[in-house]
Length: 183
Image 1 (cartoon, rainbow, N blue to C red):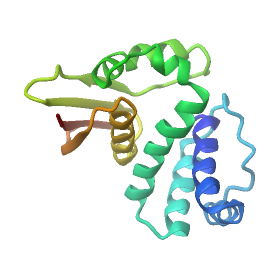
Image 2 (image 1 turned 180 degrees about the vertical axis):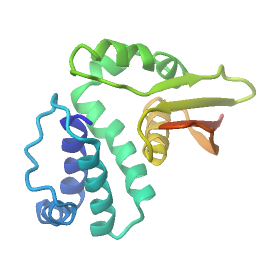
Image 3 (image 1 turned 30 degrees about the horizontal axis):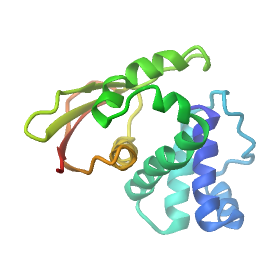
């Protein structure tokens, strides 16, 4: 993953719990240096170790930590660093999600060897939509759930994740999130 991800995780921990707690996370993760360059690619294992260590140090399960990180990513990192890009991607949650693959395509020239996830979104019917998340990475469903919750808040379109369906794949992740949009 890219340094921007690791930097955002660091921001989440330090903003909520302080530098000393982040120091504990670094020690527990066995990551000696947190001078991550935003546009540089780092081994996914570093990010996974930081996420697990964060959950351990904060005393919460990994899924809760990843969910909180997904919300932080939208509310802080996207809002601070990519707001204009996000605003140009859609004015509703459905429009934004439908344009998310195109957004990833646009930023692919910024990041070397970029392998973004793919999202497939169903049209909104009877206040329901589904969002398929397809990635070569595993273990990030709770992060994506946090993203979806925070996006619904950003667009002021309350929703509930009614079900998360894991679809069978040989490698990586293919998950369908069933959303109920509230009136």
